[in-house]
Length: 306
Image (cartoon, rainbow, N blue to C red; front, side, top):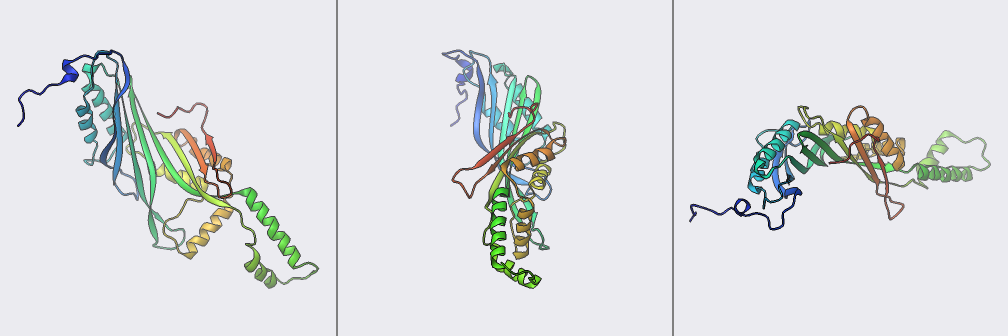
């Protein structure tokens, strides 16, 4: 039985310990959203965090249910856009005028599932998940939106490659010592059997990139950002492959030897001028060491992450 008058102590009572709070809200809300990106699965499951400030020292609590309903409206009715996030944050502030609220923030975490073709085999493709986080904030009327993406790639160590080539070179000289006239066929046969007598170490690697998204852009542009990062490193991890694709991937690794410093600089050079305030962290999960190699890159005028 529903009682006619339900108590609301957040309104009827005051805080026993008055004080302003910077952020109050919820974390880990489940939300289905639509993402309009080329060759991507449109419907995704997002984890959502939402908060507003509580500057009024005597107010006992904010209106959690109001925040929940406003976030719920971001669901699958239409694709998510920068403008929709701005509107939601503005509505959150407006719904808490009685709490003297002026700031609101929202964070969405999800996997962007993109269809990626094989390197050379026609008609072969597979799905690849890219972790994404959107961070939106409305502070004193100023709206800002950041997109964070994680992109996997392969990195082959230039130093290890040089050391491996030296060993192969020495093995070749030892095998053909004293022979002044060696047929190309004999060299090719030796290479087929011995060119991998030493191989450079390589490993799966990750680029974590944050950029400021344009508030008035018609879409989020996440797949465009991911494409630029993958082209910068040159060796994005693959989904479905046949032997020809695996061979092509080996060739890409040989053509794009990189230290962690190289990867960070290459990504930075591709992003500057195309995306606002790029912040980059790359991580090579070393196969030589039990620890990782990492590097950060961002312009000195870049905004801190929200």
